[in-house]
Length: 409
Image (cartoon, rainbow, N blue to C red):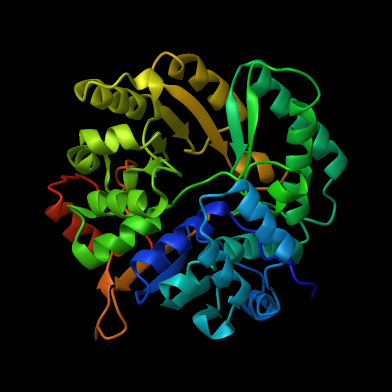
């Protein structure tokens, strides 16, 4: 089978920015990740073997000088030493364990140095998604011409409505061709004339380079999750914000706050952080409720929320983004990161609902044990992690839940 990932930077920007922060702050930390299929999908016979072959093919990837030059030009906050690190980086198959049970359910885990394994997550999700649609035959008759036209129409509607939006769709795309087609359509539409809104770019670094766009993204939940494993969840957001500002000195100033919910984050979000960070990203809960909480917090600190950015990325569609924008402009400077709805919206095809989560960490290899972690977010009752770990974190954070439903082992 052909390799699904053929470019080193066919990946989301936030994996590279977090990798840089990890090397600077936790160079010896080791972590464990687990794959979670929220729909408990039965994968085709032989899927684990085919996936293992794709992981082996990753070992042939290396960054090119063209990719390095693009990162330096478009993401100048990335230090030169990190580019040197990327030049020497190589994937290794022995970081990954893959199996499939008799019912077809898939098990994937990574374990190793955090600075290494952090660059596996998005590529693995993109591989699993594309491989699934190849092996089930659903990718065979996709009409990319029709997809291009429908993607242009999505872009035009968002642009007409004054929305600022980005492609966040690498992880669960139908295929690389699907995301490539999507970004081409969005770019062509945005450049066709002057619009009220704007296409801000794509999280995919390779496609940003191909279409001369800005790669967008900052961080993911795993940064806070790992810190919570090592230091506990009460101050995990505070530590994460402090390390992030010391790493990037004001650049990449959008913080993903919902790893353990709004309440504990709000206690950690002091005035100095609120003034330093350009804004926050809403990735769970009710978008409008979260927006109002954020606006109220800024006001309580003497900050006008209309000067701050809120990026919404919680399962958005074209319609929901346009509708939300009508309200959000009265509270903040809104923008929208749209994923699966952009890159896996095809007639008769149901996208996979898959994630890979960091579930345990230790600060150095000398520690004889890992400390477990989990993600709680604002989607109450849909937490990610082992039940006993979630219960322990809920107790520490004084969160009371009548129904505790966990996804994951």
